Length: 134
Image (cartoon, rainbow, N blue to C red; front, side, top):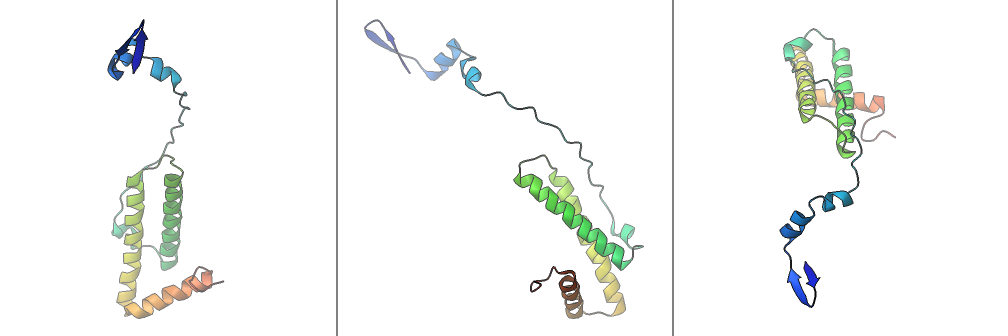
């Protein structure tokens, strides 16, 4: 930055300008809006043992609820709202535990992997959520 002093030009460094007027830059910035703090309850870590007493329908409903919560967290992330990555991780873990318990039951009944996937696809199509559902 240059400053004219009479007929000569005096060069000022940016740090010297700031030292002369320390609050000038801050005065030009718009005021930040007040941010509302959300009170988020942290997801409690779970163990698969907690889900073994649930029925298959309850497990499916819990999986769907967790996936809805994960979707809402992804929306919060896209909107740049407050969210906790640790809660998202806990929900992912809970979904995996629920699906593991359900698969263990299928294995105990002797259902192979291919039949399990086919049954899952049928459930999705019946619910209107499958690939080819219109």
